[in-house]
Amino acid sequence: MTPGLARELRAAGFPDIQDIQHRQGRQFLTRGGDVAIYSVGDPAPEESWFVPTLEELIEAIPAFARLSRSSGRWSAESSGADAADDSCETPTEAVARLWIALEHKRHGLPDAPG
Image (cartoon, rainbow, N blue to C red; front, side, top):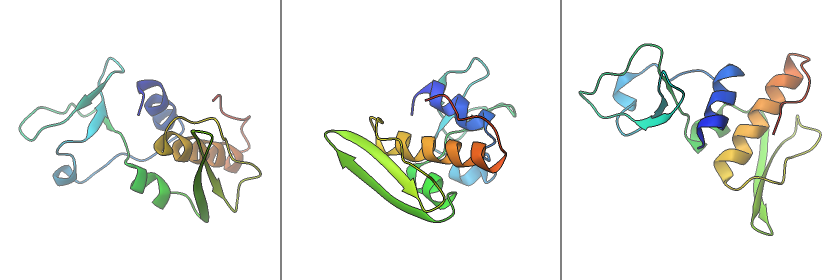
């Protein structure tokens, strides 16, 4: 996941990983906004936010419907979404953008930049 998309997810309120045992080998946002990999024994500052996996993103979407690929681009859909973004380079990006869009819709916010 790109640092920019990770920052968007964090800003939209995607929850952090609380169980330290599941942080080994995971990407996280550093204080400077970069993405790094966590290893057991490394300090992970409290303000660090761990990047969700594709599976965690899918689990966080109520009524997740499908993930599809067409002409090399990915899209994700939920029964709660009016339309799916079909311009994503990876499945993780597609599902992350869907989660952000649903969260903005839930809170009555303008569409998220994509």
